Image 1 (cartoon, rainbow, N blue to C red):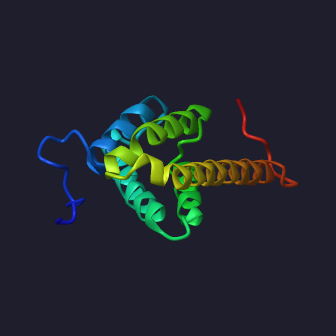
Image 2 (image 1 turned 90 degrees about the horizontal axis):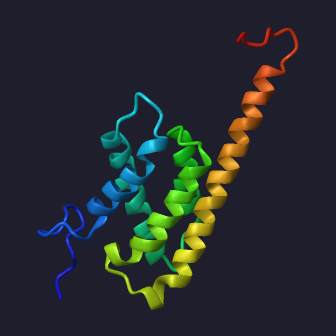
Length: 146
């Protein structure tokens, strides 16, 4: 059996990383800060799907890769709570099928990755809030005006 070609969507475009990246970007669209475009976010998400795919196939599952994806969402300024919610829903519902992976075999590794992604997101968001608070509370700094 020939290996599936992941660098482009299948001819019918119903499955695969490109379609999933579009779906994920569309779900995140209401929470994307301006001036970032949905296309820019989709491009980033496509790379993150590559990382998650590799992480699912690793033995043991590569939780650090999922932590990095969660952190990257914060770095893209996707900081609203809904971002984590829609990310979990989209990936839980479609990642395995769109990667052509068996749900029975990979449900445990997927759960581990989703947990690690959420943990990475939460830690990065907490770090960002602490850094912003620290900047604002430096002695001698005038707080920003209204």
